[in-house]
Image (cartoon, one colour):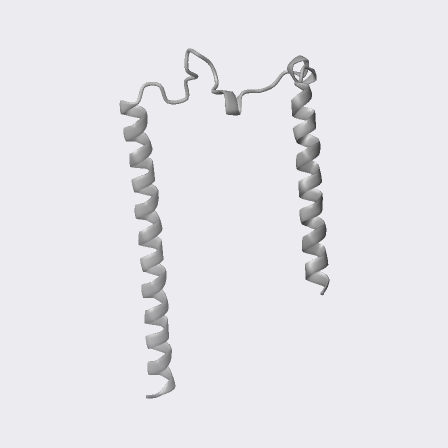
Length: 97
């Protein structure tokens, strides 16, 4: 096998691979655009907030609400901080030895 034949096969392989990737990415963009178009066409409430408001886990807490915490919350926070600190301490000691 001479050098020109080897170079032409390498070039053919490179162009085939690049062509396959280009076609795959083009099909991916078309399918994604089509899915988006179908969803927005059949789902009228896309992007609209529900009438009852945002669900609790993603709701924004105002500064006045954050000041009114339960005393049990601060106790559980200090307990959690203690547990986490001891876990980090144990992990660091285990890592050194």
